[in-house]
Length: 179
Length: 418
Image (cartoon, rainbow over all chains, first blue to last red; front, side):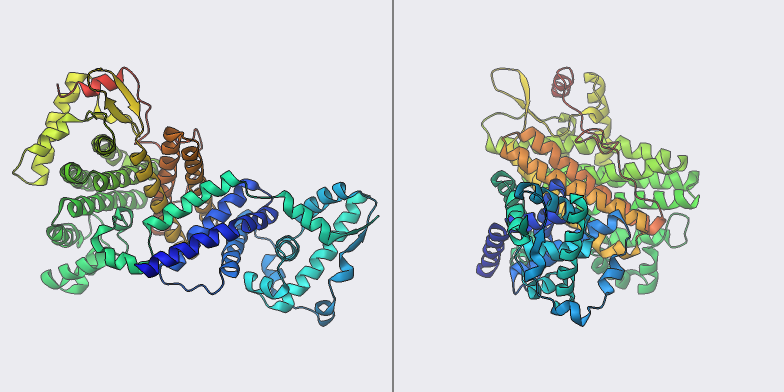
């Protein structure tokens, strides 16, 4: 009994700690507040089903993000059978994975900050799902590539490539937005 | 102008946050779910204490043990097992209904167990009707056979939950709510098939009113347990039937069916039109009737909705690879709607709008039952999953529909037994 109670307390503490961040993540991935709320709620229900039947969770954070990501991928699949699988299969090039993020994040645009925030929000929505996931996890959630790899069940190299390409695509979209 | 995207992302992230009320209502749903689906070690210790009628209705898994017992006792294990797949008209069908199912019925020693097993049997008949309708084999003989059996099982559910309601209203309410909404889901499915299944549909509709009556009475008893208000029972004819001992379930059911008809005729109100979701309260001394919603009833329905949603999701995930693409999307859509209704219900509850919460939880429950029935039908019978039109928050299903209580209706019901 005590062990079950402890599990429940841990689980609810995980809800208190991560629900806000998970929601933010879901919101940027789905661009729909209601759907994001559904996804987060379902993430916790699903996670509890796993835990209550004896599933072991080493890190709640990574586990919850993985469950949420799977639910979001389901959502994309529901909408369209796009080139997701093809993108997931892409092989990272050695050059790309060695590119540092630093300078990539500088962007020269004739917009004030407020306009840019709005433009970035729209640009994220235009990214293909795998890049959107990586960029959101890296910059909205503050994950390191290793953590992104864990949350998306991909290798760290692929995670780095997606971040890099995602940012490059984002900047490209922003430039078009400006013109 | 040079910008650092990192700063922009940070500000962007800050702009999207979960409000404290959204977080609170979601926490409420999650913690309810955790309380009613405790960690497995606790479940094992709690044993029979945990009421899980929804899971027990799913006869994909649980009956296996008892059916195996039947197999050992009665005939070769292979025959008994194969008979489980038989439909009316098949050689093995009599083994299924008169041997396998009867052995299991004999093992059901309490009203709760009897009610659950009879509910499952009633559902089996509806599954068989759908299977025969799809294959074009629902002829007159099979139809009559199925109708008679369905009525017998549904009547036995009525009698047993009626008995149970007096001693354990929450469990009775759990069972009838599950059965009622599951029947509505079957009804929606049969409605989509061709005319062959219509007579079976009529038999189904004729029984749902009685189930609804028991549910309302159990809701009343539950409310009375926590309130000083006297709850007037909605179906006195059923009460009388409960008090009569002797005879088997079917005899008692027939008997109380007649009395119920007589009662309805006197009042001019059919029990099929009983309001759903409302607890009828007659305040002592006032003689007036108001409808109110008991927090216990809302709480119980919330739990039922959560359980059914979990069962629907588990079933979907287990069988998703066998579903055609289009049906996957439809089932997911239904699951989302069901999840959303639970959240809306929790939200309404937080605002103190219990009636609205009750409707939302019921909507979710109906949708989850619909997923369970239609996913199985999609796989077994190739019947495409349909997403019901969202006419109103609760009007997702035909059949056992929520009907708002009206002034003219309620006194008619209450006067029935006078």
